[in-house]
Amino acid sequence: MDAPTTTSADSGSGGGGGWFTPRKAPPAGATTDQETPSEGRKVTPIRPVGRPERISDDHAESVPAQSAAPAAEVAPAPQYASAAGTPPQQPGPHATARPHAAQHGQGPSPAHPPHSAPPAQAQAPTAPRAETTPRPVPAPEASPDARLIRRTLEEVGPDADKVTSYFYALLFVRHPELRPLFPASMDTQRDRLLKALLTAAEHADNKSVLVPYLKNLGRGHRKYGTQPEHYPAVGECLIGALTRYATTTWDQETEAAWVRTYTTISQVMIDAAAADELRAPAWWYGEVVSHDLRTSDIAVVTVRPDQPYPFLAGQYTSLETPWWPRIWRHYSFASAPRSDGLLSFHVKAVPAGWVSNALVHRARPGDVIRLGPPSGSMTVDHSSDSGLLCLGGGTGIAPIKALVEDVAEHGRRRPVEVFYGARTDHDLYDIDTMLRLQQTHPWLAVRPIVDQQAHLQLPDAVREYGPWNEYDAYLSGPPGMIRNGLDALRDIGIPVDRIRHDSVEELVATGN
Image (cartoon, rainbow, N blue to C red; front, side, top):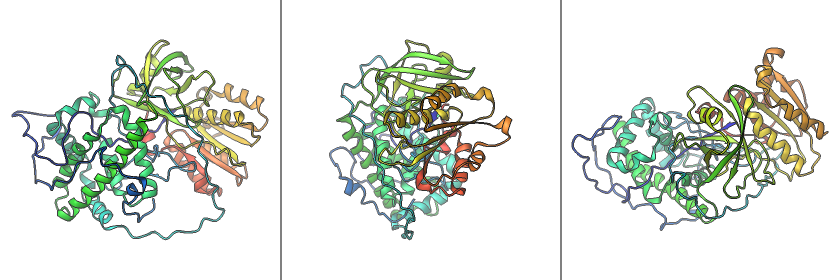
């Protein structure tokens, strides 16, 4: 299924230099496809960020920790809430993974040899059992830097599109060497990079959420070719765009708060990428070995990675096709890890979906695609005896199937209830596979829910069964289904920390 897209906060390759160091003026007549920026007010230089200034987790988490806060990888897709948007959710086995969203990938073309570093073996996460009655934690007061940052975001929120355009114009005029690292058409990138930066900045007080979120982003950005020296260029242009549009709230104190916050954000990501480089490649090549067209717009694509690819059932990865370089989309693994090492994905072609249409209608056995690292927290806690309540809609059945296989492989007879939602019988493209699994495993129940027949939405159908007190819930499917499913599960008393899913908002854009 289409899984969430990871947020990116990097820029590209090439521009070295420190923070806000003087740059040569752009050549006369230089133009971009966006608003041409003026240099604007000069800002105070600070030390460059980079690998030499490594910081420990404790240092990284010393960002003022004052507020509590959603996945992509991970935290949920960043959306403007003012200008920045939906906060990253608490990552971990019971949370949405998230992030979710900059698609300006880069890295060597398939003609270049892959990274030779062997990947580390993935280990199943262990999740602490949720307390029956969580003790309320009073919301701490926001730090001074957080208050200044949120004040800026409130002011620039109504001009979010202009801020985005100006940010990219600054980036490409001041650092033209970075432009080739973005997709040829910026329609696929647009405001994702800036949203990622603003979302991270807005939630800088959330150290327990923000640091894992940023580490995941830093690791994921390796496939784009991001280097430590690229972060200052992005930070410089971020400050430049905010300076131009936060005309009433911007002052030296606010600027200093943004510089401090961005410096910490970028350093956490740089350190995470450096650590990941020691144990895993930046990407894998995968040869398409089978292409099963289940319906006119859904295909099951199976690939053989060029080297071992460790992942967990319920996770997802990013895919890039040779037909659309530097455009990555996220898809969930459709099976638990297999002994033959093959990876399967369920892909639905969506209107104007570059990657999804290429995978469904163009890919054939023998084609080679690229895979980013695995991510996501919608995994099974095998130390628990709780049952699994799984809601899968459309191609969202792919990771649900993987979870069922994972439970079966661990030999635990824990109950698994699968609600497979679809609009029509035709959309139940994988129902035969799920029913075969039900016949094999007596602890598994599969309940197809077809809207047009039952006149009942999938979340509503779940309310009619139960009780679900002893179950951990898993949601996978279209954003609307996930939102409605969350409401339904809360209504029937399932604690939020026992509901797991990856992304909501950014799922709207995945697969494009």
